[in-house]
Image (tube, rainbow, N blue to C red; front, side):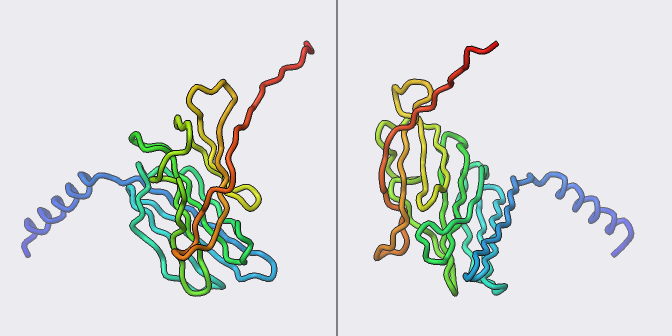
Length: 193
């Protein structure tokens, strides 16, 4: 290879590298360590809109899961919890609204040898809840996953919610509806000056 060819090759590689679109990147690492139970370490990564999930149990790799789509690549938070108290934690990946797709979540459970996806009744991609008008938020609370959202025609400070319990079904783990209701937040001000 001549010197001129080598410079052309380096210049072409530099141009290609400079023109490549940079994907959004997110990475979160969690440790779930409960006394008397195995120690789990989880990694959630998002490149562009594709999510990669990997786990380790007591230092041993478990088969990962990849290819799940996170709209816009916008992860708002990641939580590890054991909602069904079976000693095997679940990982909940909450994603933000993007390109007209409402916020949602992806959920995974890991056991002794592998990890699997958790189904979500009425969750992201499913049928919207009653009186749904967007503004979703998700969180784990005690032994439940709670989805809050804006109800159509509701007053300021009012939000609807659906609570989900983690159940074992013939298809595997499923977050099933375990209650719904309305929350009211008031902004009280004292008369002190």
